[in-house]
Length: 570
Image (cartoon, rainbow, N blue to C red):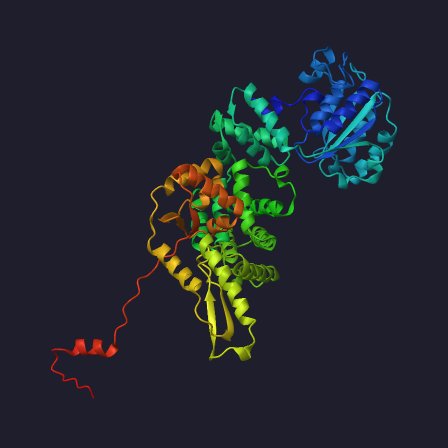
């Protein structure tokens, strides 16, 4: 009969136990020094090695040839415990043997000496399930058991144990196993099972297992049933996970306020039988990653993801404020809580995505705070974050300095009528936002030659722009350097005009990347390596031809010609 992996590869010594060195080291030192306790309490979440360590300890205290605190696994006692022929090791499940009569049976048995072993060991799993009467019946025996008896109690819910039990045991708290330790153990098991498991797939299994090695081995079992070559795609299919690309696309849809795109992705995932509650939970985890990137000094040590995914997450986090991310998580958490209570899971997730894309329809305090933060962000960008081609920016700076000088002149020395002059800057890198205009009331100065030249230069640049045929090669060369930048510009086109390279895209994140100095230099470097030329980067704006002004009366005359109606000048 086939034996599942978590049973087949259960550790046989303390050295094989993953991620619990603080416990295994202590137990080995106690065994080496002969300072054994009469009652142990192992606590911790599922799959962290409590029962495994209890079985190893039961073998070690009776081993005939103990080696540095570990059982030898070869002596008569070790082999007898492994094959079940030694009956002095009693393993009891308190979930099904929880009554006072079951405990009384143990109390009666402990008076007899072990048949083969030095110690009779009782391993009581899920001990928190015992009744109050059963705990009371165990108290006296647990406090002063015979010299040949050792109790090992294991539980996942230590808070349910009476203080009288806790005070009589030596307690060991098992931690969640680190992802890297789980991945290393999975790779070891995969090699022994002659299965090809990639490191990224092992890390993905470790992240799904959430610190439980038993869950990780069970998932690996399912993956082996699908294919002997296990990559991330196989793991996602076995675990029913949405691919990370979908999570990034959904997050991008929320960031860009593209409701239609978000709902289209949800419909596609639903048709592929993806669980909507699990997808919602994964989205919350994705925005949690963005929150940690915005908040923690070294988030890479905490987040479990590939380098490419981390880079793309950084790009999305740079575009969002912390208030935005918390608001997104709050909306998704409320939707997750309502799932399974009447409204369909898909409908709840769709409603959440619509709220995230249109915060004005959400009347909660969090939605209002997010809208205020977004407004502050827009105002700040409109005032101080305009990105212009270098020549135009210099001209605008000169204009501003001239304006300051002119406004400082006393009014009585200036002749002529007053009027409102509007200085319009060059187009912002983000074409979706209105151009910032600053109305200043002052005496009308003579038009600056720089202002005329700036407007003419920009119009000339846009009008002479021609399609840039090498842009596809540039994006392709960007992928090895930064997949996040390449993804942001994937649907863009570029136009060449003299020394300028003008980019046309509807993705706002692309323009945010251009505003970032280091990112812009990376793009320029790749363009130089691809084309051999240095360009100034800017947005592309279509210039519409000006229509000739025509006299309405002349148009009417032409329309009535030949109709027999006489038109007079009167």
